[in-house]
Amino acid sequence: TGVQTCALPILPEIADVPIEDLEQLAGTYRGEGTIDEIRLSDDDDKLYVDLGARRRVVPLTDGRLLILGTRGLEIQKMSEEADRPTRLRVVREDEVVAQLERVDE
Image (cartoon, one colour):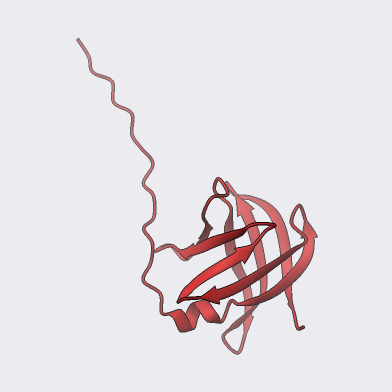
């Protein structure tokens, strides 16, 4: 009898990123899409996003930022100035959910 095996997808691991790098992401971003505003904040050496509920954001070894508890929402940096992200996009399974720009408050 033949045994069928199912290959599980290889998931990226959580990256060990200095808190100073994560702090550079902190700020408010606004734009267009299903999500029109997000606020990223650092607290206790961890990064969080407020999407109506506070969610932890973890950096992955492949450069993406995974938003925990959202069924796969990710944050990707689009552009930077002086080592601070100026534009982000939020994606789920390669579909762009939102494109956002940093706003100063």
